[in-house]
Image (tube, rainbow, N blue to C red; front, side, top):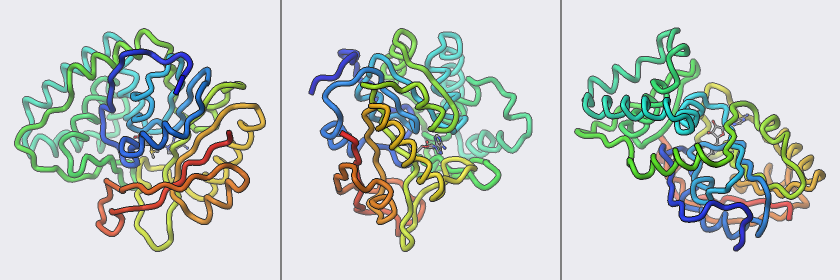
Amino acid sequence: MIQLKQVKNMCMSPVVKWAGGKRQILEKLKANMPEQFNNYFEPFIGGGALLFDLAPKHATINDVNQELLAIYTCLKDDELYKLMLDELDKHENNHSEEYYYEVREWDRNPRFELEPLWKRAARAIYLNKSCFNGLYRVNAKGYFNVPSAKKEKVVTYSKENMEEIHEYFRTDNVTILSGDFVEATRNAREGDFVYFDPPYDTWEDKESFTAYSKFDFNKDDQRRLAQCFIDLTNRGVKCMLSNHNTAFINELYEGFNIHVIQAKRMINANASGRGAVEEVIITNY
Ligand SMILES: C[S@@+](CC[C@H](N)C(=O)[O-])C[C@H]1O[C@@H](n2cnc3c(N)ncnc32)[C@H](O)[C@@H]1O
């Protein structure tokens, strides 16, 4: 497969494990990508499995999750990057069951939102690496509420991977946004490529994970997304979208190419939501 503007010899992987992470279906996604494109857009970046695998030279990434925004902003900025790594080392050295819960409590303080980005970013990575199942989950108030995995020792990052990502973000044209997906695709032009990996549509009879932030992603959001997909199609933008293989999603994207694939659900607090599930990869080309 030939991709335009891809950065060669990069071997990066996500710095956080994310519910809905796409590492296990990467090959299927890549097999369904367009052969060529100009700029890359990923409006629901999460852990960024596809972005890091592709390393496109001109990318716009976006997510509403503020902790993710803090992480990606720190990965781009020289000074914030160093401060974040120092803070991660501090967390590793201090790690204990008690320390985990102490750090987890920080977001209950109303002043937490005023904390520097590097501190928020390092906290998010540390909690992600030391919590049960590596799951990012918040309650209705937006407080991180996953219990500890009870690990004796925690390794929060690979220096080599962090350095590569920092280099990639710093020297290449990666734009980081934090808003709604519609706004994040506003600058997509003919010949660009957008990969949408939204929170999954839910089956009525199965538990699904949707608690990425205190904002719910409901059926109306899925409808708004389908409209955005149609608008981009009319502008000549190549789009690919993944979701569960539900009747609702099939209805919304009727007329586009819908490829059904088998995937394994890795992260779910409830065992009934784990196991094999059917997903779809939808393309407009
Ligand atoms: C399925 S996850 C993405 C997983 C990612 N592709 C990976 O490989 O880790 C969906 C993401 O959408 C984000 N999100 C939810 N609502 C959003 C919105 N309205 N606009 C942009 N991002 C949103 C969530 O915070 C979450 O990170």
